Image (cartoon, rainbow, N blue to C red; front, top):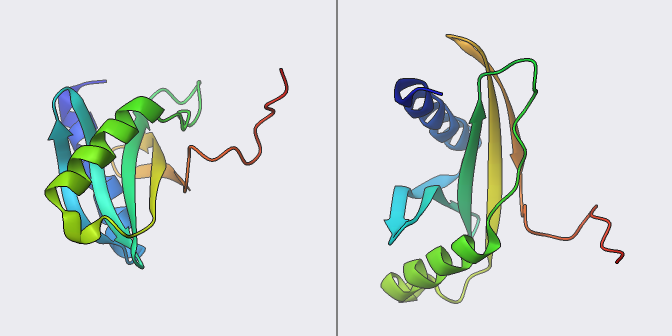
Length: 123
C-alpha cells in the first residue's frame, strides 16, 4: 500500500473517531520504535487505537491484531508523561478499514482488541 493511501486511510479513521464522539488526545504518537495511530478518551477510558488498512478487496477486512508488548510499552510511556490520566481505565482498540474506492471504505472498530472474549484459549 502506498504512503498516500495509508495517510488518507488513517485520516479517515480519525474522522470516524470524531464522528463517534471520541476526544482525540494524540494522533500518530510514538515512543521509541512503537507507534499508535490515535489515543482517545472514551468517557474517561483512555484507548490506544491501532489502525489497520487494506486495499485488496479479494482478501477482505484486515485483521484486528494488536501487539500486546508494544501496547504495554506505549501505555507505560504515555502515562509516565501524563500522570494525571494514570488512574483511568485503559484499553487497546483496533480500527480496520478496507478501501473500496477513492471515496468509499468499510470500517470496523474492535474495542478492547486484547480481551480474551471470543478466543479459544484451550491448549
